[in-house]
Image 1: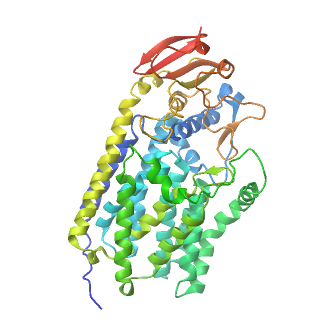
Image 2 (image 1 turned 180 degrees about the vertical axis):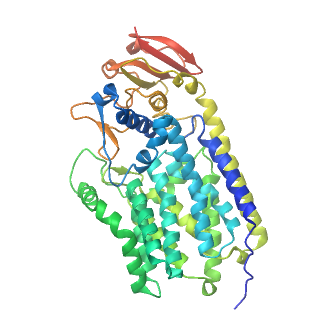
Image 3 (image 1 turned 180 degrees about the horizontal axis):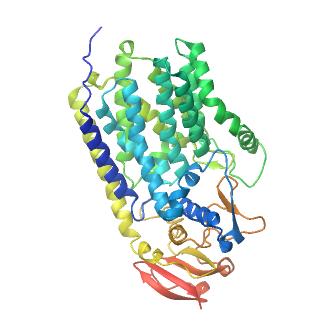
Length: 480
């Protein structure tokens, strides 16, 4: 059996420098108007929730607050930030926090499994996953929480001391994951079950898993039953769709200007670590491999759409990708290959930065117009150029106007208030139009002011409005 010398841990200052540099890069990415489809809508949720907590009567006429189980925890968690600043800043801070949690979760796994901390660099592109690009803030926040919970569980399996403290911490992380997003919590349950059932001390491992998962499972049991029943009962929710082909082609087909390397780099790195593990599996611990297989199998069996949720499956590969990076000691991988992988990571992040810069330049002017509050009444957003950014298949323009609500408050629209899973929902009997392209005068009737995106003359349906401000391709209109 070949003996591999353990890699000495880097000095603490190197880890600090890495996290500071990553934090600065992440802060630049989420500043201004980031390319994140649903993020403005979640930001509007945050600001509207703050308005409801403050007792704004105009907002309370249309909306009411809820504390849903299985979704939306970051919106409540960052409520103090929304109250002190606004929903726009709170949403950007929550996204930045999620970006920071990914390397921290990876670092936790690496230390517990005695892997060198520098491998965290190889996992950085995974932070810019589909939950980031699509602005699925609850899902994006829940993914690293699930990884942190798995890391803590692995530590409890390795070190028998302080069971009570570990169980409390595991229960808190599991509950936070469940409250953020049920899909990530489901992945956490599958991963812990796989580890427990294959552990040498199975009875103890199952008991630890039960202590950590029992509180969130009891809390969300009724909600899970409701969601499962939707899969078999016709309704106005998304039709169940397994989408077998989309498991393999959705990400490569839909990642265009976002970057080819955003898909290719993690896949290649994962493949290298998997091959290295298979070559040295007798000398490596089995637990990470079991976890990797369990998460990979979960991705394959998870449908594309189920119980009203959409694009469920493509949110899961990031978990397996991070676990793949701790499968084997990277000392078993040839140095030239490791150098190539690091170069690919740098190239992938450069591609990510380029797309952020390009998108922010494309929608330039929006920040200027949302810096002043709308007049009393309902304000809205109209796109004259559709909902897709140049060259992309993702609908980045869908919710851009909701940054106005997120920044200034008031009565906005199109931030999922018609769903039963968000903290802010329409009051019974109230409803506002959602996506608008200006083609229908009837849909514009409730609005006293609009943000309009797109050059060229305004459609006839907007003749009842007058332009009061302009910046770039953006116009602000108010009722005559």
